[in-house]
Length: 333
Image 1 (spheres, rainbow, N blue to C red):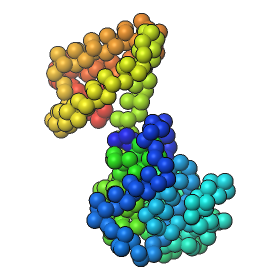
Image 2: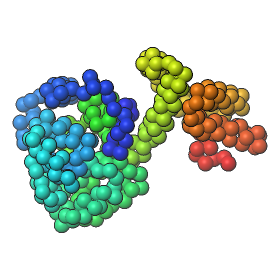
Image 3: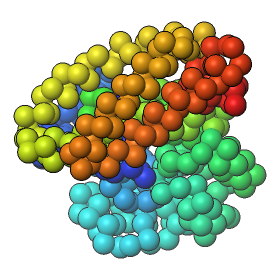
Image 4: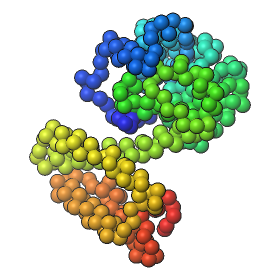
């Protein structure tokens, strides 16, 4: 994620202060990004404009990115204080959702979830025909598909997106955005949306961006909790988290190797050798013991251990090799 992965609804992954550049630093990075993509300032002379609805931390980051790329931005938010802050940076104010939609062909939504989209756009349904809605909010794939259908039934085009970023730092080198929906709609507006982050168009299925986005967050959320548990064990043992961090970062360098190895194994049904499953069960018990000896809640490790134990039980009961991956897929009970 994020990837240093986090988007609208997951803001727990903050970056150190020294990675959050001031306004001029962000502008330099934006210009460098445009130049790296072959865009010069002369190519930016044609006026471009967009509306942004929803000014949480991510929405505000999007507004700043657009403004720094020379895009005219009209903003709307329920609370006026956030609008005032963006207007101070050069954005235009929309007092109503209708004004925001009417201001530009394309409107970007940065909301808590898709239910909020119905509440927001429902205030100005008559202003949707002929518009393009790019919803970069987080939700489930089916809710994205339903949202796309709802928007199109009211005369607008629709793109779904999932923002993989380091907190609200969408200019971080590891940040990018998944998009899905009609290819023609994406192609027509990709250049306008480009300042937000590098783009990964996945396909025409409106739910596809959310499938990939949520899949990456599935790996990220347990990592957040696991790091908290690990840090708690270090601290409760009387040692320094600062001393631990370099080793955690160093170990994370092996994660790409494990991702590739497990991907190959999962395509073949997952790691299911009984000796492997029993080894992982034993290893989980060592983690549980070390954590609980230090007075640390090991619930997460107990949960992980339960999957290896289920796989061992299923394998011994069926006489077949059953992996945790198969259990997740519902292929074995």
